Length: 308
Image (cartoon, rainbow, N blue to C red; front, side, top):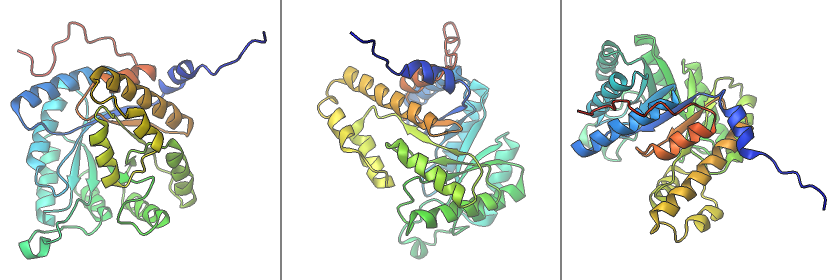
């Protein structure tokens, strides 16, 4: 019988992935128990030596204080840079300048600049919108302090954009305003990211476009999130998760397999780094970091954030 040759998928991923930076997104906890859990999660994820943690804010900017508090805590207890989600919605330019000054004074140097979502009745309620688009916010932050500014990118286009090319031109405006990199909305189809990179290059964009990978431990929830964000959902993923959500262990292993495959394919499409949307979990993102060749075995005996 002739010998069969198979691709050493994990070996190749282990060799090539170790050269890539990783980062982890978390969201602010809503209770003391959740806060303690997040501290433990961050301590575990810090073992992968991420370039930064990012901390989300509400789309209308109303949770800005909570976001800043969490960022300070994570930066102190993990000794890892923290990137704050900073939205223009819901604030005047003067308020944005003041908050930028406060972040800088608190040692925050990394910002993800977002337009944010403006409520339909914002004018009636007198809700301010400092900048119509994120490029204005980028320019303001860069002028105020020497922040490292990331912006959002949408490989399958922003839901409000008339076309992908129009959306890429908007992304280019954010880079022209001073953005350092873009963090992409997650996609389930790695080819979408590959095509997006090529198209962005044709528009003259040469800054890093970092793909996002979401951890689908709760498929129903993630699917709703994807549809709202305009990310296409392949039929095979629905079929893969069908019937396993009542089996948590199987769902976890299935999610790990999909993340591993996604990371490997994104690396093949030239990803300059990988940004994990962790959903405030650590097991799968940390395992993915391990499969990328990052040393993650130093936790034993470590005091985790928030431990007595």
